[in-house]
Image (tube, rainbow, N blue to C red; front, side, top):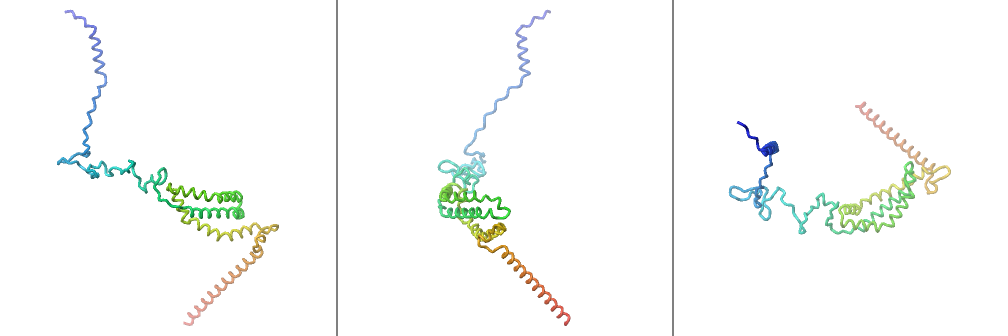
Length: 255
């Protein structure tokens, strides 16, 4: 029996079927999302009441998380606590209580000016390290600082009304933390000035005499006399200790 010739279109169908069998399966469509019960985000109990594992809000809805919703101000912006890292004045302006720091800031600036001026005058005269103190430039800087003190104090006072960091600096200066430095300078200035004059005095230039201070010979003699008195005191103490030891031995021998 003769086999009939296949229809030419059959080969096309065979090729299409083979291609379909070797291709990747068509992905299934995702199922629709489950319906969310806004009144019961954590589900409902057997009695049908919404579960509230984190408590409820003021309007009676279950809280979504243990922290609840962030409080918001009337403008709709989240409030910042005063001790929050974002509420330090770095990009966040705090509502600071008005306070005038003008007078104490002027006093603190005067202290800074005086200290810088003393260093400019006596600093270059200090042995060894004095060569590193630019006296004239520092003195000129202090002159400009003194002239601008009112404006500088006013600027910091204005900043302290709006910025937390400026407020802390103003409060620190206003409390007189710089005052002890001024007192210390007054106490140390006679010593540093005299020592500087001693080391600057030479055979050709008597700085001690110019400042109406005792001469090198007088100061050296005074120190030698003080040292002799110290040696005499030590010798007297040693003699008293030896006498006490001898008396103690005599009492032991008599006993």
